[in-house]
Image 1 (cartoon, rainbow, N blue to C red):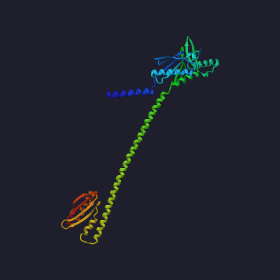
Image 2: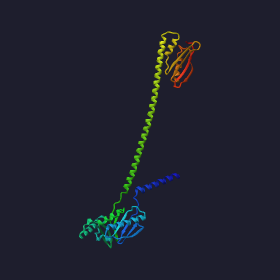
Image 3: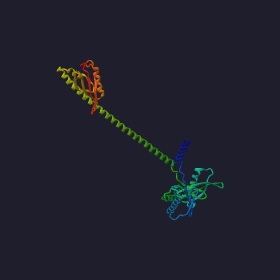
Image 4: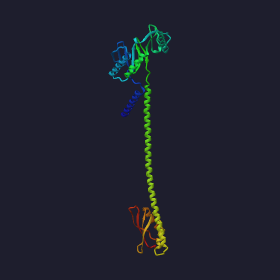
Length: 353
C-alpha cells in the first residue's frame, strides 16, 4: 500500500507540474516605472521599490536611454530577467482635460465619446488628432458623470519604446498617473498557450518519428534474419545435391559391374551362375567389391555402402533370396571409413549353392 500511495503522489506531482508549465500563464511580477518631474520610482509588483534621480533633458531620446539603463540596473538588482514593464508618465507631458459626459453613456460608447471630445479639442488648437495617443478614464465625482482625457504625442511614445528596446526591454503598458491612472496604450497578451501547445506538439511529433524509426529498424533487423535463414536453407540444399550426385555415381558403378557380370555369364564357366545372380541383386546405396568362394566355408562377400541403412538393405536382400541361397547371411564386419562410407564383409553358408 505504501508503494501505491507513493506512485499516486508522483502522478499528482507530475499533473501539477504539467498544468503549471503548459496550461497556466507564467507568473511574472510586473515592474512599474513611475516617471516624476525630478526622479523615477521603480516598483516590483506591489512590494519593493527603488527611487533614482532623473529628469527630462532637451534631447528626449538620450533621456529615455538613461531611463532604460536605470530600469536595467534595478532588474539586475532584483534578479529579474524579463518581467512586464509598466510605464506611467506624468500628467505634465500630456494635453489633458476633464469633460462631462451624458449620464446614459457607458463602457465602450463612453470611451468613444471621450476620444472624440479630445480629438475635437486638439483640432480646435490646430493639431491633428491622429498624431496623438488618446486615453479616456471615466469617473464619477460630486454627482458628475465625467471623463479624464489625456493625449500624448505618438512621436514621444515611439521614442520611449525605442530607447527601452535598445536596453533589451519591451513596454507592456503605458499610462498617465495623476489623481487617477489613465491607460494610453497596452500590449496585446502574448499567445503563451499557443506556444506551449506548439512545443507539446513538437515533442509528440519527435516521439512519433522516433517510434516509426524504431519500427523501421525492427523490420530491417527481421529482414536480415530472414536473409540469413534463406542462406542456411540454400546451404543445406547444396549439401543434398552433393549427396544425390554421389548416389547417382554409385548407381552408375553398380550398373557397370552388373554389365561385366552378365558378360562373364556368357562364358558358362563354373561359379559364373553365382556371379550372374549376384549381379541381378540390387540394393540402393551398396555394391560388392570382392567375392571369394570356399567349398568348406561357403561364399564370402565384401562391399561398400553409403551408410548403415544400405548395409541393412544388402542383408535383407540376401535373406529374402532363400530360393537361391538356403542359408541366412552372416555379417562378419562393418566399419566406417574416413570418407564416410561403410566397408562390410559377410558370409553365406554353401548348403544352398
